Amino acid sequence: MTELDLLRLLQLADSALPIGAAAHSFGLETLTAEEVVGPAQLRAFIRDYLDEAGMLEAVACRAAFAGADFAGVNEDVNEVLSATKQARESRVASAALGKRFLRLVFDVCGNRRLAEALETAEIRAGEIHSSPAFGLAGAVLGLDEEAVVAACLRSMVAAMVSAAQRLLPLGQTAASILLWESNVAIASLVERSRGVTLADACCFAPMLDCASMRHPGLSTRLFIS
Figure 1 (cartoon, helix red, strand yellow):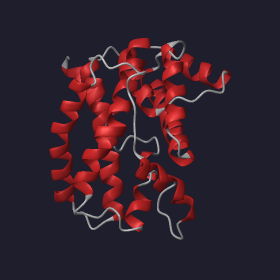
Figure 2 (cartoon, helix red, strand yellow):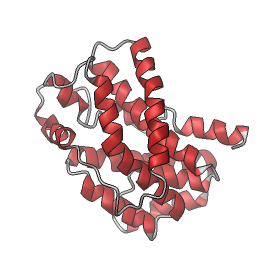
Figure 3 (spheres, helix red, strand yellow):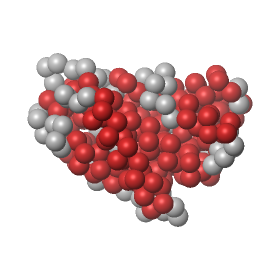
């Protein structure tokens, strides 16, 4: 990629991107409240999260990148993700973040293809999840596919670690070490996801799904999901 491409991709993958990601824990808040996940378990949790959810999101990102519009393969991608995300809170969160992400990218770059994707989704009452939205934006901006998938996964992990910092006694240095170590797993996942079709990808994370479903019952909540 050119230096400009790299800078644009870094901005899109920034955890501080104003799309509302900081309001979601995708079930982690429940697991920390129930003392299932603490600082000692966080490293293994992120590794397992990437192995299961990460693979599906990586394949979905690739499929959207290849489709480069909302019709056809991208619509299938979002339908599969909606069906796979069994917890309502996580499913709604992913779709909300996806739409906000595309709207922000459109506001920044003004690419009409992104606006058309949003308009088509509204007409069909469809959902645009966060990883396909990332893949679509990367393709429209002419970025490198492998780098886009890696950045998408990195933003997912960064959001999870950020949530963990607000839920657990996890300092800045410890969080940075977790993110640094996750880069190896992300790079491996990017490579393993090459050539994997949406039909072959799957995600089995019942603990996280059930935690997301129990989230509305928490007596005190910091996050929407």
